[in-house]
Length: 245
Image (cartoon, rainbow, N blue to C red; front, side, top):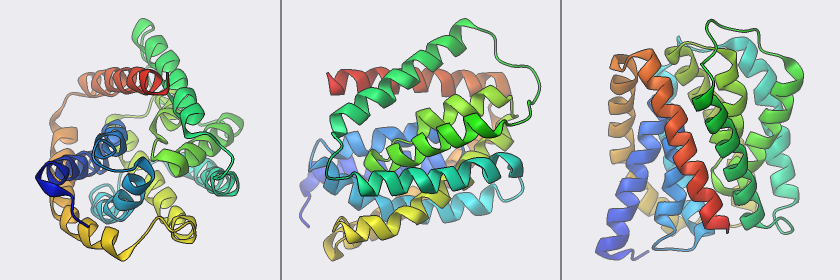
């Protein structure tokens, strides 16, 4: 697979974004597929990056193995499987543009609300109904375009978790979702030998970025951490809306 100099540059930056997300900055990975789509078909970009996500997940799981909310995962993880299944079943019928617009709209409304209203002080018990709903949406949008971040954050940021628990829970959830996506991606022909060869190279910068992301997450003050997450969510959501329009 010949990407050319520019293509490899875009691919390495995309891999770095994936790694940073697994290190505790979950929203930034949403930039990876759109960035790589500048030099290749978006569907091919999603298939190429999936192995990079999975290897990065392994590093992220090790880094955050002691920081997560088990109740939240117990609610959201099974629902995400349902969302992936829906994405697979409707892959030939659903417009990626419509999904992109929906993700952008949800993220924009939530981020704007979070910016205008003070953040919840203290942890809240995770509710089952909203968790199943947003978990399903997250699994679906993650399958379609690796964009499960905004729906997940609509639910997770409302729970008032501390930054380390938030980072760990996010990493574990999406490691689970990405592993589930392997079978349908393979069945749909989005994983090829050429893609795997390129992905093997990209795994190196992605793994290094995971370690950098963990370090950044640990040293950034908690309020600043969530401010960065919220504003990044708003910026990416607005970009997705513009892309869909």
